[in-house]
Image (cartoon, rainbow, N blue to C red; front, side, top):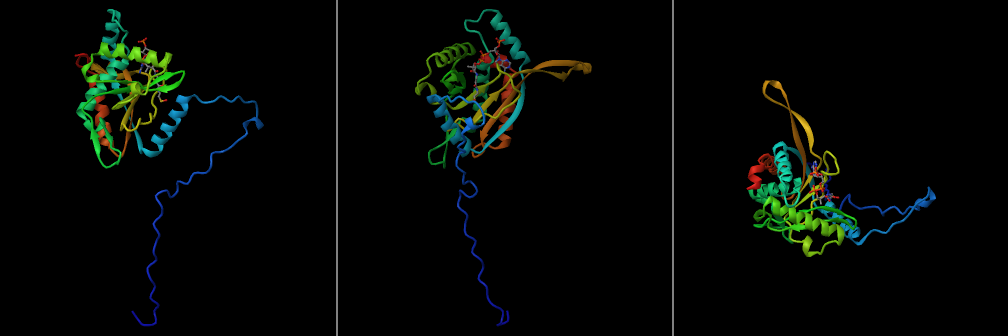
Length: 265
Ligand code: CAO
């Protein structure tokens, strides 16, 4: 380099703070009555708590939702036959879903796990407690059914009916909503084709199901075989679960839901 060329120091690029781009503007304060008639209703205690937890989970967990479906034609036939034969508690799809989820958690233990408080370790659970979202007049409540691996479809149906009735009539204690490994949110009786459930931290995945639909499948001699197909929406924490595992997990769920005899064992 010749002596008359000025030597320039490399520019030091300052590290942007981790919060870069996430400075939020204040929440809009709008007097809606300026625009028309309104009514103000205070949120319930449960709604306020749910809002806080949902906002935290949505902001802190990098969510991905994987969509799949399961052929439940045989399952539905067996379920209806059992109900017609006079089950003590009417069987809905949910107890079967719980058993299938337990089977899939056994095959993919990273779904039955939580990040510890430091975020540096994955805690793998050897128990199978499943939370079920229940829509109540107090707001959304999630009772946890314990040790679902050790309970039959009929036992799960009875427990589910008792706890969801209690949730709707009286609400639930924190103890009844603690200790879950994985949550199921079923909107099947309401409708819908898919949705994005929010992971129930510190769990790492949640299964949403919407209404089963009749869909055609190519049968022998190109005949149309109408099947009952259940949409599955699996949201997961992408820090812990990768997309390939989510696809394997839902495929396993679909396989298990296609073998209702095994779930009933
Ligand atoms: N496809 C088609 N039909 C379905 C179905 C599905 N995926 N899921 C349930 N059904 C049917 C049931 O089989 C039943 O029909 P039959 O009388 O013909 O058997 C009917 O819908 C009513 O079921 P149910 O709702 O009483 O019972 P369930 O076990 O399916 O669900 C419960 C129980 C407590 C989970 C449900 O009532 C509920 O509260 N769901 C709301 C969950 C929710 O709000 N999630 C959103 C959370 S995020 O905001």
